[in-house]
Length: 541
Image (cartoon, rainbow, N blue to C red; front, side):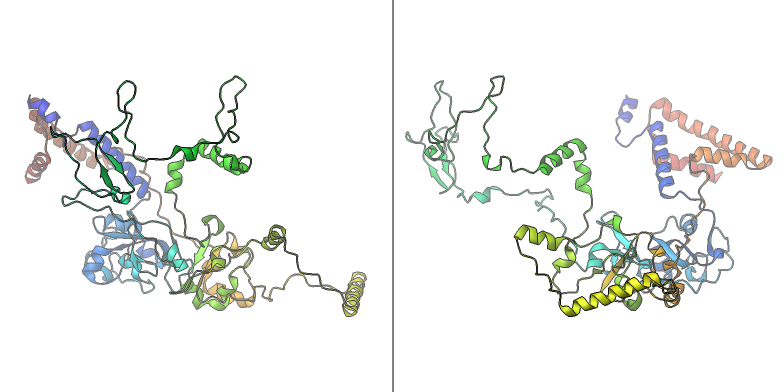
């Protein structure tokens, strides 16, 4: 009886379930942390590397700081961490005087003397867990949309930005929560108030049962159950239903001339009546094709969950990198000329100013052939061609004579491409007050590299060549379970140490078997308190 009662306990799990849950946890951990966390990057100097902000240590020391990937696991795994992703020219602060509240690094083991922090590290609100120009804390559980990191980072220190903030648009409103009853349950929506009907008590029959009534929803008045209004009966005596909407069916009767015989199929069965003759032959082929595609795909759920960027934001497939409006403004004389540069950047993405109306031209750029389509669809006559005058004819003849002479003179050459010291960057700069740049894939191969432009590119080498980002080495044991990894580590120990480890393991195994045997014999559940008490007893001996 005790065994059956314990088996029904909702908090109990079998040993097999526990092992499977542990294996799943190990698999999830390998997906999130696939690298070997045994090397601190402090002595590697400033690197572009993954950086983590430890809010626990920052709150204690009252100083902004960041740690490398390995230290986030080996030293701060039980702290409140914020992943900042890659930061340029950053040196790990773990085990330095900047994080004195934590002490020495567990990997460098400098517990007696803290190291000197790097002076080249840059800190901003990201190290407080906040991002974007809106200074909002990032919550991965509730965040909606995509954030983009600024490539240049000269002003913003490689900050991350929301799509709406890049465009200067407000965030979409959150769906309101349904109202709650006094007990906290959703109260639902009262749909009956839409009818406008007056709420009146229903009269009761002599025996207390409700009587049948007819409701006129237009007037909201109760109609008494009289002989004139009593519900009609079918030939068998069953009620035919209540008439809630009195209608004059004469309005729907078709004249004899309008009535047409229902067409029949070749087999003689009725094919049905076309109720939408006005649409007959007018449906585009794309409608039926789209319906067929929707039926074949079967991925409606995935389409509903797909994030749709705000109007005016470029598609992810059209650009490779992003430079925020703050960095563009500082270097407007150079980066401003990149906007719309062929094979370098898309057209400038303007950031709306507070109180400024949306410009439809920015949200919906005109197609190159818009003018031609306007002439065709609106039947507007295009502008008349300019009549060529005698002066124009003489000028054309002069140009033709010069062109013909150059074809026979091999010593005369015409320059078609700018020289190495000639800048071929566009001259015009967008007039918008603030705008961001979206760089096209392969843009580094097409930027100008004249003497003047190279001075700017040398100052920001990430615009000239792709950066090298430090990546910790892969974990050799990432495909092994904790048991397999422990066995492998045991095999790498010296013989004497390995024998001592096996002896200690067998000793614990024997004690654990003796501890669990009474529970198995009596069918009792092993609680968490029992396990803790067992290991506390071992530690005390």
